[in-house]
Amino acid sequence: MKVQWLKNLLKRNNGFVVERAACDDGAPLIELKNVVKSFEVEAGTFFALRGLDLSVRCGEFVAVVGKSGSGKSTMINMITGIDRPTSGEVFIGGVAVHELTENQLAMWRGRNIGVVFQFFQLLPTLSVLDNIVLPMDFCNCYESEERPRRAMELLEMVGLADQANKLPTALSGGQQQRAAIARALANDPPILVADEPTGNLDSATADAVFTLFEKMVAEGRTILMVTHDNDLARRVQRAVHVSDGRIVSDHG
Image (cartoon, rainbow, N blue to C red):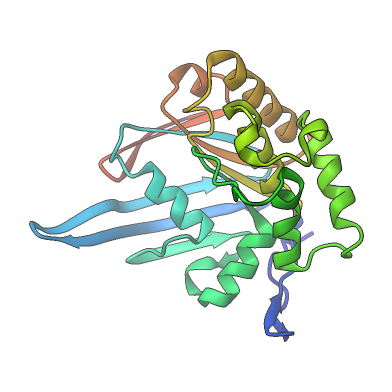
């Protein structure tokens, strides 16, 4: 069965209908080809990525490791469509992400990529439950009456059902990160991208978050995790080390 990510982009109610992916073991799920990303700075041209190539298959748990400024977060931004390459190509399930318009990107990302940030990025004026419902509202996923129920199921999965009606500021850092993971899963994306998800957590909480990721991978989800934590990197199936905008080692 062929991977089918973006069968149709149909205008409807000023938005786009985007079909989610079905994994195909015969083809890469994520593919970066000779990706270059440069920025103009006072000193001249700065290259964050220098002809980077990466291929990730369905169900892999990949740690992206590198020092600050190595290009690992820029690489992740290429995959999520948050940023675009200066040159090169980015394919997710055969879809040329670098060619999508901004409107198409927003809808595609909402249905296909879950992003977990280091600093949680929960909206402080919304309850935890409403933070989870919001991505479903944005992408018009699930029937409106189903969304709160699904949000509660996700909060139960991460152990936060009893915190649903609280504001994010009433939660601990570890609880906020688990809420952010639940939000990233709201639209059931096949890919989860986590940028330093344990960077602000104590070791016990970080281990609990990592164990949750392992469970998701066992259930078939694909996860890319940016991390400085070499101990966590050693626990994943595959570790990709980035330096000066290039992949310098790839162990798995």
